[in-house]
Length: 68
Image (cartoon, rainbow, N blue to C red; front, side, top):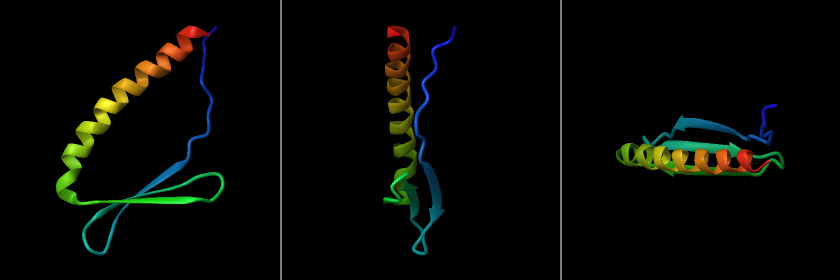
């Protein structure tokens, strides 16, 4: 039998602001909104950091599944 993790996944909206910044907007189940504004020059470094964090997060999730 497969161990599966079911969890709440809030939606993320990506848009471009009127001043040319990238905006990430997330609304959770309580209708609380978080907005992050990112300068376009920072996107490549952010992508690298997200890729590193993704590998770490996947390892953590795999370890949790293996414990069950």
